[in-house]
Length: 135
Ligand code: FES
Image (cartoon, rainbow, N blue to C red):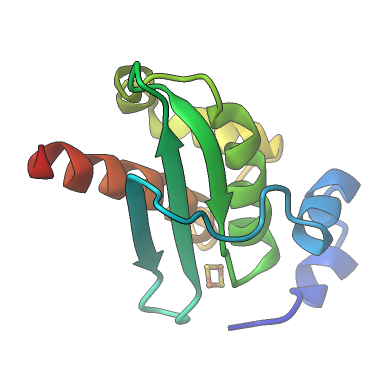
């Protein structure tokens, strides 16, 4: 698990808003009684993302938290994704593709960083699949 990926930042690869999300991740924390709670980790580096979703009576996402710990791309991707989820139904989230997640970052993501960028996406999808299978 790396504190900050200064090599990439030094190369100017990360835009300022990505570093801002990394340093101040939005919706960071946990949720008591979350209907959906799911953790994904990257076995190559050990970085991990845990996502918590609270649903309203209509099955839409009412609240979201996460405890992303990892590189700048994985944490900022989780932070950005968390800002888009409130009000969405699980069906709408299920329809989201990887390109939606990658588009949030606003920079080209190469093959080395694709696992970082998609870690939050897999946490979200995995949580919903697990939730649906329990129903
Ligand atoms: Fe571990 Fe990016 S280096 S998720």
